[in-house]
Length: 399
Ligand code: FAD
Image 1 (cartoon, rainbow, N blue to C red):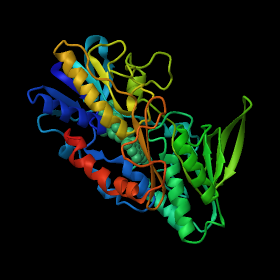
Image 2 (cartoon, rainbow, N blue to C red; image 1 turned 90 degrees about the vertical axis):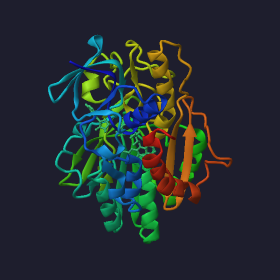
Image 3 (cartoon, protein in one colour; image 1 turned 45 degrees about the horizontal axis):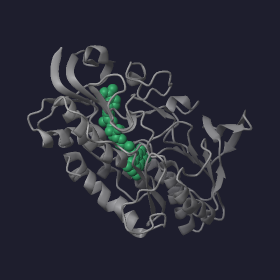
Image 4 (tube, rainbow, N blue to C red; image 1 turned 180 degrees about the vertical axis):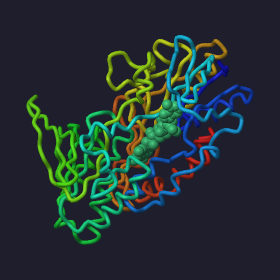
């Protein structure tokens, strides 16, 4: 097996941030990044793409452009983790060994768990911002809507950016309002969850937004099937512990697929034991694996119970880098992650509530004003500032 001191699995937001920060600490480190894709995506902007307020082409760059020059890029996919032997096997057939492993391969979109969806996503009014290919189609659906039923869903599993399923709904509602068709539109949010948002301070604002647009909220509704020809979505609805199936017709539906750790993690001993979602089992404060001391993890793939966002990675990466450097030097850990996550809740065109909170769902706000208010400045932060920060600072390890 070829050997590297540090192998980083995944060259997305988390993997590239960590690699860049490690090289800033010590340019002599021997780091390999395993990443199969030649494209790198800025996914947070897909919400605005779906709302017709951001160019999809500005959300993608060549992976080669964001790869740190000093890193060895292994352009392949991890097909097997073997942490007992400090080895990884790739789909190119090669096996690599490491002293330290960082797992950052993101989340898996389980589209296949929605019956009837295959072959029907991205046409006939079935869309999702959760993929580069279909985010632009969301805007087609919104733009061409002439009144009727617009349906938005959120699944029963943890997902990346928990707010995204509703952000696009508020943009759609605002679009209908501007075009004067809100009155003849029925907008429904069918979510498997039981609340509009986990942090009370922001939930209160969101409830007002929901009322303003006349949105109907249906909790404990889990999308299980799309009957595309009939334009019917089927939900499993839980009431008093009893599950029944409920059909909803739609003119267009924006869906958010159930999500889990990639199968390659699920099927390995890195996963949380007895958890079907298979997250990488790390300590939620140190980001070190709970059983393999030379393995660390961050980003969407891990078991840490924070909001799965790029914003969380911005706080996780320096903690992981500090603790990994300490492990290399055989010293004690100095840094802890407090569960910080952020959700820039777009509530309309030019309107945004910047939710920021920790593991205990306590707000931890950056700005010296009440962030539960809808603000134009915060919308500009999302649209203009954060994409710039991502490409120019976060991926270079300097923010
Ligand atoms: P990713 O960035 O997804 O990267 C994972 C990488 O691993 C990919 O490059 C992939 O090719 C690679 N990979 C996968 N499998 C393998 C394998 N077997 N071997 C090797 N490599 C592999 N975050 C925010 O902070 N704010 C927002 O407003 C926001 N909005 C969002 C809206 C939408 C619609 C979506 C989809 C996401 C949003 N996010 C937002 C979430 C944010 O994009 C993710 O949390 C972030 O990208 C996670 O980074 P990651 O590195 O863990 O995973």
